Length: 220
Image (cartoon, rainbow, N blue to C red; front, top):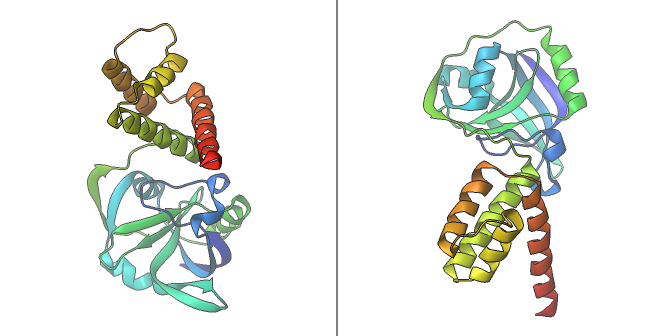
């Protein structure tokens, strides 16, 4: 185990690791003063990225309060956090006291390169863990597209609840201009298509609907 100093971490939830180019200014990005680095095998790293896992509490004792972050001109200790690497990729992780994986983060590209160089000095550590059966849902959209997808789904659900069929008909006509169905069928087809087949036409619809929202705000 080695310590890594002076890096940025963007701990989000345990379901997805956002790459550095998807970080937002309001994410609560933390400036790490010190964090332990542990080298593991690629199979274990893949489990961390794709599954819900519970790590052995014996390992937790080895990293207890060894991570420190800068906060308002003082240093705060984090109970259970570290960097895992297989020598090819690096992921920051934080656990609770029971070993449940709470948060994950990628690193900035240049900082990851430095950590990978440092990992050459380490031997692989074998860590006991339990893999929870539920696999983390794989998302193939960018963070921006995922936000837009959720926005469109909410717009459709709101329109159906308010029986605003003009909006449903408009959205459907933009996506399937030659297809004719009743409103209920259109709604169901759109929900399924946005969830399973998100594409460029939905980005354009998002921009239009967002513009309508902003225009409503300025006139109210």
